[in-house]
Image (cartoon, rainbow, N blue to C red; front, side, top):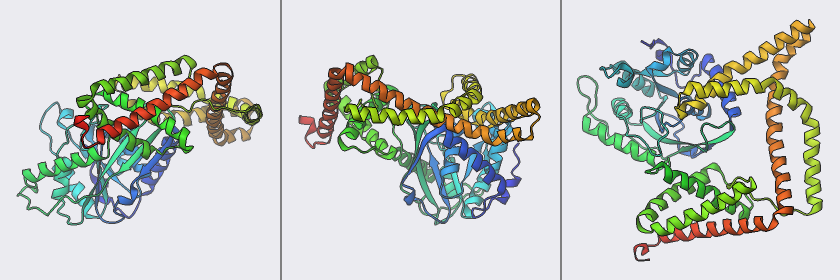
Length: 466
């Protein structure tokens, strides 16, 4: 059974050194793994007093890791008891001041006792701390929220705190398994559990109030997440949003934030369900337009959601090419060394994650991040030691500092080089397939206009009679 002793020492106004160390390491790993981590709505979060975060759970240990690193205030977690017995992971959950919770699914369906868990969780809140809970109970890849467990409501009501606030947070990944993808933390409106209740002799709140608050938590999470009845619907919405956003960026000349794209997809999901019920033929027509656009993009080797090649003059093209060539010449030698040093480990981490996940796609990025934190430092140490043994030069130990730097520069070069190749490919396409690109622009604009028109149709008061 996990040791509860350290939980007694949790103080919301004081961060222990071990927690600060783990937060720094995990924060660095996550900022490398994800290209962009964006927060939205943090002004809604209470700056003082007890707070309970409730979050959707779609990416295993990455979800609490992101919140741990990005939360404006120190946060503690409820963590399933099985994590405490895992190498490395067990040390991490203890270091993050997590409180173990026991689940029947982990005890072969046998009865479990979480009384001490609830006592410690309520004590943490009474001290003015923040407790994060994933009410779905398990990580998953479903297109909608799973039924809420009652634990969050039991803790909130049992804490007997008039100033307790519950804050729903939606986690949204554009591709949770992929290296250098993006993630959004969407903070919702804080709300109170309601009036204080009388607890029974075992310290439990009334069952009816627990169920009512559980339903309220589910509704609040629904407001900060994107849900669809079927995965196919969610995929269509994502495809439509990418093309729509690409056209809007082309028209307005400004990149959309992750929060803006999130809101757009939420509106698309709501519109999808309405169109599916009342105007299925128009929805099917839009889907065919999107499919046709994607097919042409695939033939040209273009990402359907990426900007189309720009019309450049010869002078502009030569200037852009010269800048890219300069960056390439300066960074190439260092980048090639960084690639040679890190690529074998990078491939090994990917293979290890795929094998370790055993088909469970919401575990892939968790294994990638944790194994990277272990394997890359070992790689730096091994290469530095080999250089020292070969040269017998004490300066070889500088590799422990220089090797991570070369890896970072290699990553930056890879991304810059990818953009340069995209620009070159775009220039070639404009010169050789200019008419096709022009037709794609027209098709994308038509898809944009169709989506706007369908949105107006869905929102019109007399839509049923249209």
